[in-house]
Amino acid sequence: MSEIIVSDLIAVDGSPAVTLVLSLFFLILVAALVHHFSSAAGAWRKKGRDDRLPPSPPAMPVIGHLHLVSSRPHVSLRDLAARHGDEGLMLLRLGTVRTLVASSPRAAQAVLRTHDQSFASRPRSVVGDVLSWGPSDVGFAPYGERWRQSKKLVTTHLLSSKKVQSYRAAREEEVSAVISKIGRAAAAHTAVDMSELLSSFTSDVVCRAVAGRSYRAEGWNKVFPELIGAAMVLMGGFNLENFYPGPANVAGGVDVASALEGREAEAPLGHDF
Image (cartoon, rainbow, N blue to C red; front, top):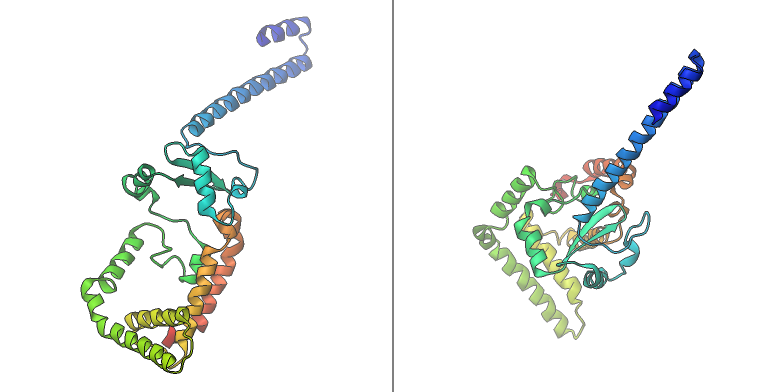
């Protein structure tokens, strides 16, 4: 149809200017039609991909489903899964991060066994980089050859049956120290802070297993639980990077590098594990 109109107009006025204008008009029309059909095909393909995704509640711009998660996330996820979870699977968008919620035994088995390697890795964490000197810790490192080697070292040199038995004398000494402290407190009719006592006991046992000695004399046995508590707050609290990893990584990359360099420069050799 467009070709007929252009041909008729050229026949009426065959000047070069009119021919150029009509040719440009024809090219613009063809480009618009190509763009329209390309957009329609892209939307159809996207709709086909979305149709294969698990069901999801209505989301809000920018924040996604964050407004649906309360201070008790396990309760919120349970209630959302009861309403929207199809066959135990539900998809949420927490900020910009897509999160798959498995809420049935069958779905959990599919995630943890059938497709275990697909879900075995973990995203890069700025907090993890600072706390564990980059992604070198078994708990933060992404799934791969380095993680497998680290896990093998931990299993062989820390958690093997023979190695655990070698710590028996140290554990017995630490248990005796705890019992003696409780006995002295009972004799003096004073209260015992069991949380602090057990935290120090755990720290002392770990130090003797990792470093071969306790740090009670230097007072580090009280510092370690405080550091662990602060680390747990950082890891378990609200972190922007968990929901908007792109902007957080750009903003936090320099801070992480500075923090790691500072720790390398300031960490005393005797306390560096």
